[in-house]
Image (tube, rainbow, N blue to C red; front, side, top):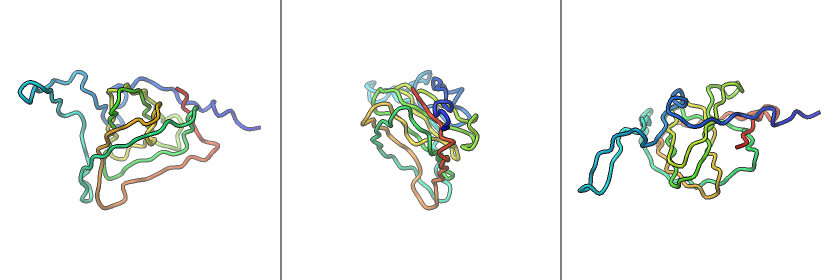
Length: 169
Protein backbone atom coordinates (compact mmCIF):
# COMPACT_ATOMS: atom_id res chain seq x y z
CA UNK A 1 0.00 0.00 0.00
CA UNK A 2 1.34 3.42 -0.98
CA UNK A 3 1.78 6.04 1.74
CA UNK A 4 -0.56 9.05 1.82
CA UNK A 5 1.43 11.92 0.22
CA UNK A 6 -0.46 14.53 2.22
CA UNK A 7 0.80 12.94 5.44
CA UNK A 8 4.05 14.80 4.72
CA UNK A 9 2.48 18.23 4.23
CA UNK A 10 4.46 21.23 5.45
CA UNK A 11 2.57 23.91 7.38
CA UNK A 12 2.79 27.40 5.86
CA UNK A 13 3.35 30.37 8.21
CA UNK A 14 3.35 34.12 7.48
CA UNK A 15 6.77 35.43 6.45
CA UNK A 16 8.28 37.55 9.22
CA UNK A 17 11.80 38.88 9.78
CA UNK A 18 12.06 37.04 13.09
CA UNK A 19 10.94 33.64 11.76
CA UNK A 20 13.14 33.86 8.65
CA UNK A 21 16.28 35.23 10.39
CA UNK A 22 18.12 31.84 10.57
CA UNK A 23 17.89 31.60 6.75
CA UNK A 24 18.61 35.19 5.64
CA UNK A 25 16.80 38.51 5.30
CA UNK A 26 13.18 39.42 4.64
CA UNK A 27 13.31 42.28 2.14
CA UNK A 28 10.59 44.85 2.76
CA UNK A 29 10.26 48.53 3.51
CA UNK A 30 7.94 48.15 6.50
CA UNK A 31 9.47 49.88 9.55
CA UNK A 32 12.39 51.23 7.48
CA UNK A 33 13.09 54.96 7.46
CA UNK A 34 12.90 56.57 4.05
CA UNK A 35 15.44 58.99 2.64
CA UNK A 36 13.65 61.53 0.45
CA UNK A 37 15.54 62.05 -2.83
CA UNK A 38 15.05 63.39 -6.35
CA UNK A 39 13.83 66.82 -5.28
CA UNK A 40 11.24 65.25 -2.97
CA UNK A 41 9.63 63.04 -5.65
CA UNK A 42 11.04 59.69 -4.47
CA UNK A 43 11.81 57.83 -1.28
CA UNK A 44 14.85 55.58 -0.95
CA UNK A 45 14.99 52.68 1.53
CA UNK A 46 18.59 51.60 2.20
CA UNK A 47 20.09 48.53 3.82
CA UNK A 48 17.30 46.06 3.03
CA UNK A 49 19.53 42.97 2.70
CA UNK A 50 23.12 41.82 3.05
CA UNK A 51 24.35 40.92 -0.43
CA UNK A 52 27.19 38.42 0.07
CA UNK A 53 28.61 37.37 -3.31
CA UNK A 54 32.34 38.18 -3.37
CA UNK A 55 33.73 34.70 -2.48
CA UNK A 56 36.08 33.22 -5.12
CA UNK A 57 36.02 36.34 -7.30
CA UNK A 58 32.24 36.67 -7.56
CA UNK A 59 30.31 39.84 -8.33
CA UNK A 60 26.68 40.85 -7.98
CA UNK A 61 24.36 40.34 -10.92
CA UNK A 62 20.76 41.50 -11.31
CA UNK A 63 18.30 39.31 -13.24
CA UNK A 64 14.57 39.02 -13.86
CA UNK A 65 12.90 35.62 -13.46
CA UNK A 66 9.45 34.87 -14.92
CA UNK A 67 7.92 31.94 -13.05
CA UNK A 68 4.99 29.59 -13.57
CA UNK A 69 2.72 28.03 -10.98
CA UNK A 70 3.34 24.36 -10.15
CA UNK A 71 0.51 21.79 -9.90
CA UNK A 72 -1.24 21.60 -6.51
CA UNK A 73 -0.41 20.21 -4.05
CA UNK A 74 3.19 21.21 -4.74
CA UNK A 75 5.53 18.20 -4.51
CA UNK A 76 8.84 19.06 -2.89
CA UNK A 77 11.40 16.97 -4.74
CA UNK A 78 14.48 19.20 -4.75
CA UNK A 79 16.26 21.63 -2.48
CA UNK A 80 19.25 23.76 -3.45
CA UNK A 81 21.82 26.05 -1.88
CA UNK A 82 24.52 28.43 -3.03
CA UNK A 83 27.84 28.01 -1.17
CA UNK A 84 29.54 31.07 -2.69
CA UNK A 85 26.88 33.75 -2.34
CA UNK A 86 23.52 34.97 -1.15
CA UNK A 87 20.49 35.06 -3.46
CA UNK A 88 17.79 37.74 -3.26
CA UNK A 89 14.27 37.36 -4.70
CA UNK A 90 11.94 40.38 -4.86
CA UNK A 91 8.49 40.25 -6.52
CA UNK A 92 7.70 42.80 -9.21
CA UNK A 93 3.91 42.41 -8.80
CA UNK A 94 1.84 42.55 -5.68
CA UNK A 95 1.00 38.82 -5.56
CA UNK A 96 1.53 36.35 -2.72
CA UNK A 97 4.18 33.65 -3.16
CA UNK A 98 5.79 30.84 -1.15
CA UNK A 99 9.21 30.51 0.47
CA UNK A 100 10.51 27.08 1.52
CA UNK A 101 13.75 26.61 3.47
CA UNK A 102 15.35 23.98 5.68
CA UNK A 103 18.47 23.44 7.71
CA UNK A 104 18.94 19.85 6.45
CA UNK A 105 17.07 18.54 3.38
CA UNK A 106 17.20 14.98 4.83
CA UNK A 107 15.41 16.05 8.05
CA UNK A 108 11.72 16.62 7.37
CA UNK A 109 11.24 18.44 10.68
CA UNK A 110 13.76 21.12 9.63
CA UNK A 111 11.60 22.41 6.74
CA UNK A 112 9.89 25.79 7.10
CA UNK A 113 7.36 27.23 4.65
CA UNK A 114 6.33 30.88 4.57
CA UNK A 115 3.66 32.84 2.75
CA UNK A 116 5.16 36.10 1.47
CA UNK A 117 2.88 38.99 0.67
CA UNK A 118 3.38 40.72 -2.65
CA UNK A 119 5.61 43.39 -1.11
CA UNK A 120 8.06 41.03 0.64
CA UNK A 121 11.18 39.54 -0.83
CA UNK A 122 13.80 37.26 0.68
CA UNK A 123 17.57 37.18 0.60
CA UNK A 124 18.75 33.61 1.19
CA UNK A 125 22.01 33.67 3.14
CA UNK A 126 24.98 31.83 1.69
CA UNK A 127 24.58 28.02 2.12
CA UNK A 128 20.86 28.20 3.00
CA UNK A 129 18.89 25.25 1.68
CA UNK A 130 15.82 26.53 -0.19
CA UNK A 131 13.39 25.42 -2.84
CA UNK A 132 13.52 27.06 -6.27
CA UNK A 133 11.00 29.87 -6.78
CA UNK A 134 7.42 28.92 -5.79
CA UNK A 135 4.69 31.18 -7.16
CA UNK A 136 0.92 30.96 -6.97
CA UNK A 137 0.22 32.78 -10.27
CA UNK A 138 1.61 32.27 -13.78
CA UNK A 139 3.98 34.85 -15.26
CA UNK A 140 5.10 36.06 -11.83
CA UNK A 141 8.17 38.24 -12.27
CA UNK A 142 10.95 38.66 -9.73
CA UNK A 143 14.10 40.71 -9.57
CA UNK A 144 17.03 38.52 -8.50
CA UNK A 145 20.34 39.71 -7.06
CA UNK A 146 22.85 36.92 -6.82
CA UNK A 147 26.41 35.89 -7.66
CA UNK A 148 28.07 35.77 -11.04
CA UNK A 149 31.61 34.50 -11.39
CA UNK A 150 33.88 31.47 -11.33
CA UNK A 151 33.33 28.44 -9.15
CA UNK A 152 30.45 26.06 -8.51
CA UNK A 153 27.75 28.05 -6.70
CA UNK A 154 24.92 25.52 -6.89
CA UNK A 155 24.43 22.39 -4.82
CA UNK A 156 21.24 20.37 -5.28
CA UNK A 157 19.69 17.72 -3.08
CA UNK A 158 17.06 15.47 -4.70
CA UNK A 159 14.64 13.76 -2.31
CA UNK A 160 13.76 10.11 -2.92
CA UNK A 161 10.18 9.80 -4.16
CA UNK A 162 9.10 8.16 -0.88
CA UNK A 163 10.44 11.23 0.98
CA UNK A 164 8.73 13.91 -1.11
CA UNK A 165 7.04 16.58 0.95
CA UNK A 166 3.98 18.61 -0.07
CA UNK A 167 2.76 22.18 0.15
CA UNK A 168 -0.94 22.85 -0.21
CA UNK A 169 -1.71 26.56 0.14
